[in-house]
Amino acid sequence: MSAPQKSKEGLSSLQIIFLVVAGFLLLVAIGVGFSKSTAPSEDSAADERIAPVASVATESAAAATANAGKRSGEELFNSACVACHGAGVMGAPKAHDKAAWSARLGGNLKALAASAVKGKNAMPPKGGVGDATEEELSKAIDFMMK
Image (cartoon, rainbow, N blue to C red):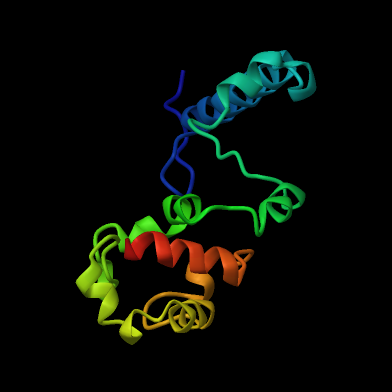
């Protein structure tokens, strides 16, 4: 028996045959794996496996609009204002700090509400609560001034 012939690239014919057979077996194995997999529509456990770790429940637009104008000052404060006014973030006057609030426009509630509607410094218009009414903002400011 003669020694295996070397191809121009340096692989022997035996090595080439081995690579072809290994590649064929790999393709067969992949094909078998796909044929045994369950279709996503039939795999009830798939939803459980890919479920997110947490979810966010949001109010529908209709429900949010229905609440507009009905919130108390404390409710609006606790839902949005507390993020900055609770700790005095970026120069926001802290809630219930009478001195800090009286320094703002002389404590004029109407002027403060008008300022809140437009936004002031880092505070976005309406404090980021787009559906807040001017009356609700006044109630929230009044709550923070006490």
